[in-house]
Length: 266
Image (cartoon, rainbow, N blue to C red; front, side, top):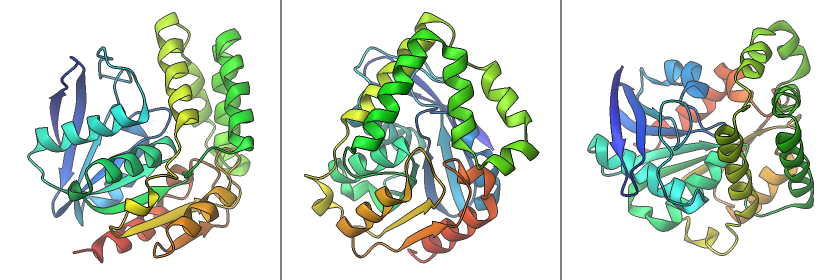
């Protein structure tokens, strides 16, 4: 693995890494925004692909910059990672909010996206997600530890989390308790709530695939089915279980589904 830094036009510095060999594949995280989310997935894919991950602006080892944090800006940041890595085009796989970022990038710069992997993501606003994230936003403002605890509890399949309780403990230990950290999370929630890809979905003509989990309580499977209706050429895989964080709890199934699909793009 080799680390590299990405400087953006507004002064953010993003920490990125690349590992493996083969066709380039960029993994884009969701609301949490960390490269670390992808560690087990990257380990499973690096024998077949050059895998790139990065901490998103204001998250982990990456600085915030001055630009407004919206989905379009986060998509620009993915392009900046590609530029810094000297990569013209890559397969882009985004999970949750990362899937919104991937859709935005594919609409803005389709020549840079050889394949579009959409994991636990959505196309347009829904009453369910709006109510859920408005409630989470209120909780974040009043009790960030409770915000993190409840987010973790509903992100994993309960049986998996019970058997891997350290995942809960690590998450709660990193709760956004400072004013700055809370502000960064809040603006990221506002960004995901504002996303609506309905007007540009017809432009997403590159090969795509959609994957979700039937027991996801954050981005429920009906939203992946809605996305699949809008992208009828994209195969849809719904895992029977795994929760929202199924790339962590069902890593082998995720790596196989994404890896086999992406390998077929060559």
